[in-house]
Length: 459
Image 1 (cartoon, rainbow, N blue to C red):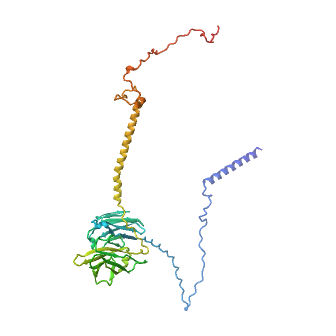
Image 2 (cartoon, rainbow, N blue to C red):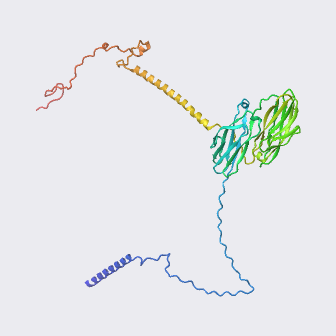
Image 3 (cartoon, rainbow, N blue to C red):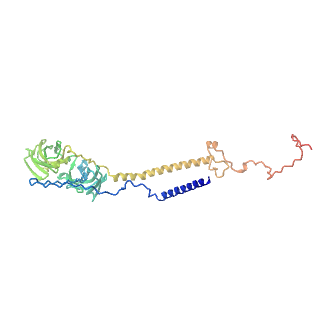
């Protein structure tokens, strides 16, 4: 019985050893038992099967060999270049207007230039002015980004898209400039862009105080146009002799740039051109109290039509027999609706930012002085009240709080008791026994204390 048992034990031990060896072998060599990568081929590549095609039959002599055209390659178009941003600007100029003060010797006025960036990118618009005879610039300033330079003879306006800038030029007009003809202009330019020129005139809101003559000119209103083109209009002028004697009369029409007199009225005894912008019409004798109407046909060019409103002038003359001739002047306007896409810019003269700032700064010392004065008065009032309250609340015994300056009124005697004159009037203080520094209580005898319920325990 022991031999089979030993044999089974040996077989079991051999089986365990064999299993352990196989397990160790499998663990130490995993690559031998790893599964192949699905992406890698486990079989050797095989050559493609050889196919034998039948030979191409020779082409007959009547048939032309057909050649297959190569397949065209797809072409890729380059992206279109980015669209260029719009660059555009506009400019407006006011007239130099003079009123009653001019006839009293004050020729000060203002010229206002407005520019607007109508493009899509920031731009810097620069420009300069040209003044007619008898007119000069004396100063100026800019707002909304504009500034003057070169002694106010030029300007520069860095503007963002859509922004409007303005330049104000102080102008002085000579006393006899109203007799002269001509107009000024403003040239504005943007980098790599055509320049724009706008004209202005010296106008008068009142007529010169000259007796014996009266002159009027009707304004001209042009019809609406989509695009500027040359057109004509008739200027109606009336000259009246308000004197008491007849006089020889004449009329001179001064036109703005781009406007010309192309037809004279029939009442002209003679006419001639004094200059490209000034035409004279001789009326002959004008009786006392008589009025002579005259219509002048004006030709307005396309460039002038694009600049409306325009301003012109008419000069009238009367020369009584044996007397010096008298002269007067009146202005006329050529107006019309703006062209399509054009917007008229504001040309009013705004206040100078420097003047506003200086006025604000000049008021600061005044305000500071008022604040300091109020603070000083308040401090004095509080100090006086505190001192008075301290005097009233002081005790009679406090030294230095007595007032022997004079008699008091009844109210003060009732409110504040009269302090004592001397310590001698005070009653003597009662004498006190000195308190010992330590108190020693007498020792009580042994036994019960009289009046107590304590009982000593009996022995």
